[in-house]
Image (tube, rainbow, N blue to C red; front, side):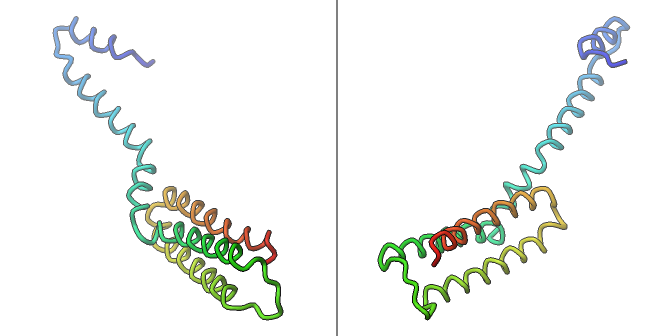
Length: 138
């Protein structure tokens, strides 16, 4: 049966023994438990500082700005020729796929939980400009 911390310390004091080993053990066990619970979050916060993690999140925001700026300036142009903006968008898609693949290959084996969370952010941020282009029919 589990005993409460106060009961364990009380038993040691009643037996005229120091409660220091019990206190030290509880402190150590609690600290290890806290570290285990927060390890994935700590790894993710350290990992997101790496360029291979944040670049695939920032690139789609720049492309979204480009797409919306182009649509605001020229409107939705549907000509036979795709044009330079469409080619820039296609190059970004290729660059985005490569950047996400490099991140996954590098970090998934090292820290799977933290890397998976960042991968979800990368894919979600890439879906925003792609969805915008799809909705605009551009």
